[in-house]
Image (cartoon, rainbow, N blue to C red; front, side, top):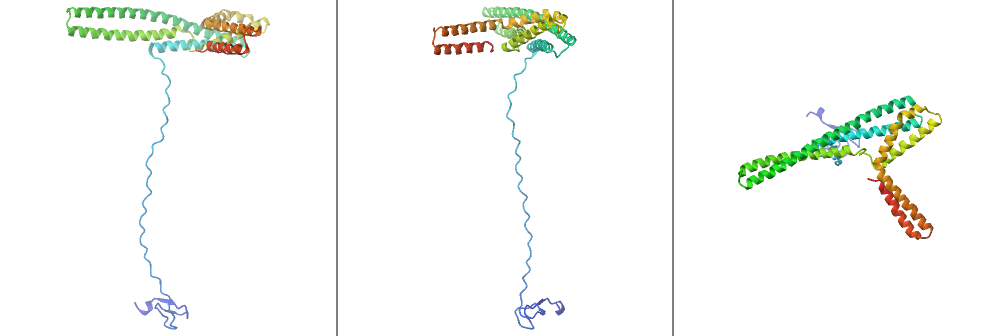
Length: 302
């Protein structure tokens, strides 16, 4: 390196620029030493942050599945009876709307006759279905009886040596398969008959009682409105027979429960009288009263 290229620094003592040596060539003062260049070493590449493991989303607890709807013959019967129940409920709801003045006479009669017509069709369909299934069940019962006799006869023929074991086994298995098929058919038909024979089976006794009470109250109100001249007598004449038949039908479904409730309330009244005349103590009266009231509550439960 030439003198022109020699590195120079400023002397802190005399202020002159001098060669970068240990001492100033002019005043002899010690010169600062240049800090050695630090070579930056390349930083190691940072490792990428660890990828968290994939966690599957929390699984929802399995919800209990609703009871499966009946299928086959039983499903058809259940659907038919549900539609019948719905039409009864609609007629009663319509009657209440008319009684409250929310429906005009013409619209009321139109809808009431429409629902009554549909209900009549479904009830006739129910009767035909009952007759059909009962005939089928009788035929199946006869066939099952014949199969049972055939199995017994085959067993006897085998025991006395008329048929060999192989023949007995084959014929017996065939008869038993046929027997199981007919038994399953009979079971299905009986389930369907059970649905068809129970009118308003999807309603609880208390719901049927409410239906009867609502219809009776609306019917009584409409009769008063006719007497007061608020609605025409023709409306009442058009629905009177049907309403009274419906009331009798609803009553027939819960008559035994109504009689049971009536008897219990008479017992409650008699109990109160016994207490009043001093025949029983207050403690005995309260205990028996609670028991009777609990029994009354059970009357309208399933």
